[in-house]
Structure formats: C-alpha cells, structure tokens
Image 1 (cartoon, helix red, strand yellow):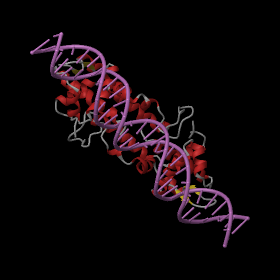
Image 2 (spheres, chains in turn brown, orange, cyan, purple; image 1 turned 90 degrees about the horizontal axis):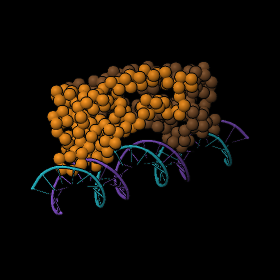
Image 3 (tube, rainbow over the protein chains, first blue to last red; image 1 turned 180 degrees about the horizontal axis):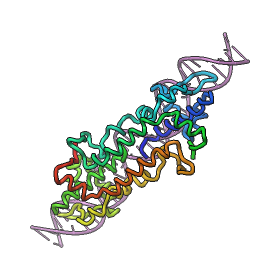
Image 4 (tube, protein in one colour; image 1 turned 45 degrees about the vertical axis):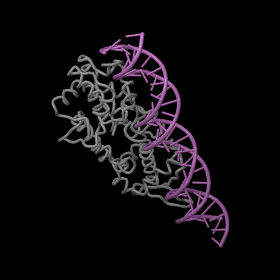
Length: 145
Length: 145
DNA sequence: TTTAAATAGGATAAAATTGTCCTTTATTAA
DNA sequence: TTAATAAAGGACAATTTTATCCTATTTAAA
C-alpha cells in the first residue's frame, strides 16, 4: 500500500525475529520465511540489508541465525527499517513526483500532504520493534494471512 | 512516494486539462505531456484510462483533444483518479501486505495505520479537480520541476 | 580435523511497471 | 470528397522490482 514488497517482508521479518529473541531463540531464514509467508531467497537478501544496517544481528554456522538484542528492540523503530530498504523518499519525495516541490514552489497537493506525511513520519519514528513484538507475543496481532 | 508513476502523471494531466478547460481550451496529449513533463505515449495511455472512467472527456479529430466540463471539475476528486489508475489498494490493502488484515485479526501495524489511512482517504475524497486547478490558475502551485 | 549447518553474496530469471512505436478510427475543414 | 489532425489501441521494448539458484564463507559440534 505504501511500502515496497521488500520493505513489507523486512518489517515482518524483523518483528518475527524480535519476538523469538524475546524467548532467547535464534531463527533461520527458512523458519522466518515460513512464519511470515515470504519467498525464502528473497527474504535472505532483505535480511542481509537489515544486518548491514545494524537492525538485526546475524550469526553464521550451526546454531546460527538471526536475532535482535533486547536493547536494540527499543532502539530500532519502523522508520529505520523503512529507510534501510526503501530509502527516505517516503519522507522527502513529492506526492506528485516533482523533483522540486516545497513550500516556495509547491505542487497542487503539497499542502494536502504535509499533515499526512508528518503523521506517518511520527508514527514510524515512534513505533519500536519491541512494541510490535510484544503485541505479537500477547496474541493481539498476526504476521500471516 | 505513495502513488505509481502512472498515477502521478494522471493527476498532473487531469489538473492541467482542468486548468485549460477553465479557459475554454481543449488540449492535445503532446501539449499535456510537455506541460507536465511526462513521456508522451505513456501519458496517452493514462489519458485513455481517465477517459474510460469518465474523469476527462476526449474528442477525436482536428480541434480535438482533452477537456473537462466545469461541473465535472466539482464532481471529480483525487480519490476517483487514484482509484481509476492504481485501484483501491491504498484504502483497502494492509500496510504489511497481508491478505487478511482487519480489526479482528490485525497485523502489528494495523491500528497505527488506521488514522493515517483515514486522513488520506478523507483528503483524497474531499479534494476536487476544481480546487486543484484554481490553485494553479492563481499561480499558487506548479506542475513541473 | 572433518562434516554439516547456517549466512553472504554473485549471477540470473521472472514479473510488473514504465515507456515507445505504429496502425486504426473518428472528425474537422478545405 | 479528400487531406490532415487528433485520440484509440495493439504490439513491443526497457527498466525496475521481485524472486531463484548456486557457490563461498563462517562456525559449531562430532
């Protein structure tokens, strides 16, 4: 709706990893893809991006997999994940695709989008991985279907 | 940022057509594409969609081109244009791409998106082509750059 | 030390979106 | 009636996004 497919998978994966990390479990790409209903190899690529951006932690070899430390669940918010995968166009870009669009030379929708974009930005910045994972843990939300 | 490229061109084209129709001028695809800075042939395809959806009116032959009647500028809002080109996924779809996501079985972002989506929906429904075109006419907004 | 399990990463393929070209159809005006 | 003009529409091409496959690297445990 608003994010790329890659970004949707990325968020879902991060939330699932966080949830399992709360139980002290490290999870493999195969398990993640199965649990969030995403293509395995593509999910692996996205996890590489999350790892490079210090959003999740990866460990190679047997007993390896992905995990997120408890303190990182507080540090990492949705905005960081979105930025790592889709870039910051969602904040910066013009709603009508103009290269130059600002209060001085606004596109016809500029003012209309100011509030919406600002709400979105605030929401993404203020929503931590911990909050999302505990919602899942409590059984309030879902990652599949 | 939020709409497909096709949809961005579509909105810009519709606003430009409306602006010119206020002056009683019919405009060709070539002129439109030049004024909104979009690829001509691709813009022609998008205008076909807008025409089929009764958003703009097309006239073939010499002196032909695209136009919008004054009363249609009030009737047509952004929501209709977006729906004609991108479909209604922006309203209906889940922020995390789940097929089934609702208050009963929400994804972790469901509640967070309710307000944002509702604001967006309201904005798109309440913004008429007339409003956008007159903003342009008065020189407050721009369609290029 | 060897084997197996796991991520990293490169190369490639498939699908969707964006963009172009050319022919057909409608219509106006000379 | 003919010529010219403009949209309609079909076929195709390029680009981007999504997805797969295979090999390399790391590491734990037997």
